[in-house]
Every structure is written in structure tokens, then in C-alpha cells.
Length: 343
Ligand code: HEC
Ligand code: HEC
Image 1: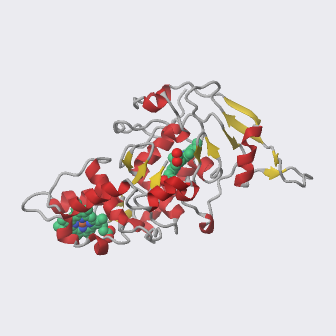
Image 2 (image 1 turned 90 degrees about the horizontal axis):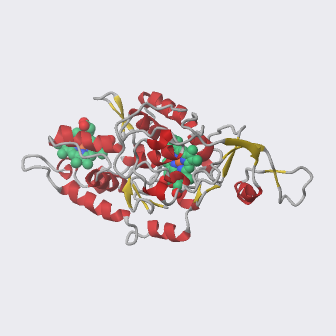
Image 3 (image 1 turned 45 degrees about the horizontal axis):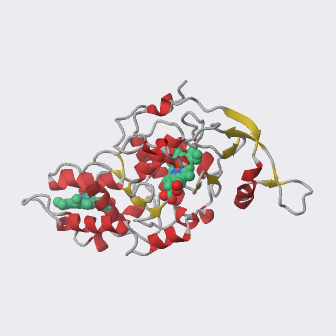
């Protein structure tokens, strides 16, 4: 049985698409993506009670209602839940998470928005905060070189038109995706950089998720570090944002989960070894310890979708850009962190 919302896109990039959102280990983490997500046996959803061992996290997140008449407030009120579990499943996908069936996705109010940074271990936060230990800065340095290098003898470097990135690119990443009038569609930062390659440098577009494009994007976005996410008040972006929101709240994939089920309704709770963040795209491209490298937001989203047993978007898909446009609006006014570090 296949439950599928997305159309099938081009093949994923090498080494991507493992269901690492749910902290798999061993074979699952190594298996290349061969579209096998849909051939996995459907996990058996069990209607039951939230297991006791989840109680402390439930309490911590404030999601568990107190049992009436329990003055200690220690014991959360147990509500019937859809307990998605793969019994005896060595790969551990979604092995220990329960979601309230009745959960209604409510948007997180601006004042309560928190970066995934806040929930990280102190060592990981320290790694991000210190440029000399943040591995993402290596890509930023590469980006600075590419910025200054002409693609060919007769074509200008990025710097040839834009000057110093510190001035010309400051604030740019905070307001992307933006509407591109010429192609009449929303464009993300990587798409914008490749458009300049093509139209202004007469050069081939850089490979999505390739080292050069990630480096340039990290360099450009790094110029906005510390600035608040500021989605443009451009009504031409509204249809994409609405589409992004619809995608965010739609159940997709074999597990019948929506992005909102985790990131709006269950953030702060544990999922395997990870803490579910609110899911804000404030640090991309970022260095993920699990990737041992820099990756784009698109790659992060494909990880989550594979974990949901859904058809991941291919790099640069209009749906992925719509989702990104919504995520940025949903993240405002958090600060840009590029290059962030994440587990
Ligand atoms: C020949 C001049 C030229 C070169 C070279 C060039 N660009 Fe551009 N770039 C532009 C122009 C003009 C715009 C404004 C949009 C447009 O008309 O295409 C722009 C827009 C941008 C934007 C969006 C700015 C905003 O405020 O929205 C970014 C980011 C960008 N360029 C990055 C780059 C990068 C990275 C390179 C090198 C790979 C590059 N550009 C090379 C001319 C250039
Ligand atoms: C089953 C729960 C779950 C679902 C469903 C899910 N995610 Fe995630 N997501 C996670 C977890 C857990 C992490 C963090 C992983 C880690 O740090 O190891 C994460 C990370 C993220 C991040 C990175 C945040 C950061 O700080 O960099 C974004 C963005 C994100 N998710 C968006 C989405 C979107 C969009 C969807 C729907 C297409 C989705 N997620 C579906 C659990 C989920």
C-alpha cells in the first residue's frame, strides 16, 4: 500500500534520503536511497496510551495535562494517542514517539519561536558560536574565494558587479526566497546565485548541493548572520507561502504524519536520540554533525520527509521552495545563524 502525496521527482543526490530524522542507526543509516521508502512494510499504528517512559518529556514540554486532583502535578493526564511504532524494529525509526490524535496544528506565536540552537548540547552550541571551531566556516571561506574569482577571462566575478559582499549582500539571505520577476516565480538564494551565473556570468549553473554552490550560499548568507528573518511583504509570494503552509500541515507518507505534528505540536519532545526542534530554517546552509559536512535546507527537508516515509522533494522543486517560503515566514523574527551547526 502506498500513501503518497508528492509526485516522483528526479533521483536524490548521492548519500541522501536516509531516514535520519528519526535517528536510525546501523544499516538504515548506510543504505543508499533507492526509492525503497515506499516498499517498506507499513508500520502498524496502535491506538493506546502514551507510555509511561514518555511522561517526563511530556511534562517538560508542557504538553501533558495534569490529572485532575493531583496536587503534585507530577503525573501527566494520559490521553488516547495514535502510537506509531515499529515493533522490534532494529532501525529504531519512530520507535518511541507518540502523537496525540486530536492534536490540532497551531502556529507558534512569534514571541515563542525558538531556534534549534537553543535545544542543542552546550558543546554543539559552543562549536557554532566560535568561528575557529565552527566547521561551516571552511565553506564560508571557500565562498569568499569564489566570490572574488572570475568564472572566465571575459566575465566578471560576483564581486565585479556586487562589490564587497559585507555591504552588498548584507540582509539578502534574510529576505529569501524572493519573487523573481523575470521567471515569475519565487526563487531561493541558491536559485538566485545560479541565475547570476547563467545570466550575468555566462557560466553553467553550479550543481545543487555541490561544494561550490553551498560555499557561495553560505558566504552570502553569512553576511546576514545576526539579522532577523524578514520575509518580503510581497503579495506575489503569497500563493507560494499558502502552498507551503498546506504542505506543512498535510499528512504525508506512510506514517500519516505532517510536519506540523512534530514541529508545531511536539517540539521539545524526544524522538529517539534527537529533540524535536520547532524546525526553523535560520542556519542554512549548515554543518550537520550527522552529515559530516555542509548541507542545504532542501537536504534537511528531504531527511525529514524520508523519516516520514514520504516522497522527498528533489532539489529545487517548486514545492520545496514554497515550503521554504512558508518556513521563513514561520521563523520570523528569529535571527539568521549561517553557518549553523546541528547534531
Ligand atoms: C554582471 C553582473 C553580475 C554578476 C557577475 C553577478 N551578479 Fe548577482 N546580480 C546582478 C544583478 C543585476 C542582480 C539584480 C537582479 C537581476 O537583475 O538579475 C543580481 C542579484 C543578485 C542577488 C540577489 C540580491 C538581492 O538583493 O535580492 C544575489 C544573492 C546575487 N546576485 C549573487 C551573485 C553571486 C553569488 C554571483 C557570482 C556567482 C553574482 N551574483 C554575479 C548582477 C550580477
Ligand atoms: C517525526 C517527526 C518529524 C516530522 C514529521 C518532521 N520533522 Fe523536521 N525534524 C525532526 C527532528 C527530530 C529534527 C532534528 C533532527 C536532529 O537534530 O537530529 C528535525 C529538523 C528539522 C529542521 C531543521 C531545523 C534546524 O534547526 O536546522 C527543519 C527545517 C525541519 N525539520 C522541517 C520539517 C518539515 C518542513 C517537515 C515536513 C515536510 C518535517 N520537518 C517533518 C522531526 C520531524
